[in-house]
Length: 409
Image (cartoon, rainbow, N blue to C red; front, top):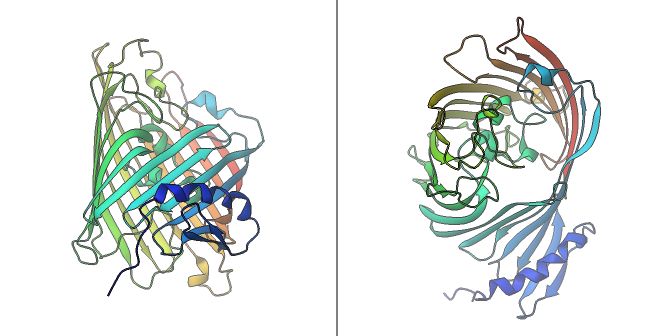
């Protein structure tokens, strides 16, 4: 039996996908003829635009996303008592993104994401699959380290990530990654990632002769790799779970990474020496566990991080964890609306394990109302932050309220 002939000019198809940014609003299906006379089907279904070649080899999903948020008395996660004293009610477009992802051909995947609020390129990566067990990725991407960070902000179970993310995440980096999926559907079902990055953040060039190394092994011991989106929106009839361990090391001028730029954690801002590109050697490891079944979800991460300040000859050890649960009450109480999910999270960060009574704590309760899954949802959460800090006689605390609408089309 002959297989359909695939085009050997996938890049010539890309210009045709550009027109879908506007046609996605029409909700119609039609055909466009590309320069190499390969027909493309463009249709809109389930809040997603699809661009598919007639032979099925190419399937791209361009989309726009808008995240609107109201918060009071502050928005982000405070890392000091001074930042607890917010008194502002803020209304803002928190995130607006242009994304294109999917397959160029059977073995080549692409992901592109641009931040329209900050006018910056977030993701630009290609993944080539030799076989399921061995794939190669290069470009600008999220380091596959912490599941909470890898999960899109669109797919979070609460309004945003926990306080743990601010202190331990590796964020986006530039470099290469080797990854694979082993023993699918068996008790030994597992994934691995090994990354080599510049180690200077989203768009940074390598500033010294060191690289960032990141490794992760994930055991899907019930035979299924779960999607990165949080919660059990599939209402699984069979449970799914994973246990994973990750580690990373890096030598650079930074102790913290974020989407905006690399920088310093709270206790290192006064210690960083300008012009020294290898002052801090970071060693980190973490374990995480996730479980989903019949609308119930549970996930937790435990982190340790060591910062070796090679200029001031100081070593600081940090520790943090969070526990998060969610469930759809309709699965157990039929009188409750099926669109409603309830969630809760507790998180703790110890920024220096050699000092007592200096922890940061977060307790967050929230609710989601899903119009179309994570692609169109309303989220409300209440957080209680408590901070112990050197130089203060008492614990600082404050309650934060946030309401958010996230819409992708």
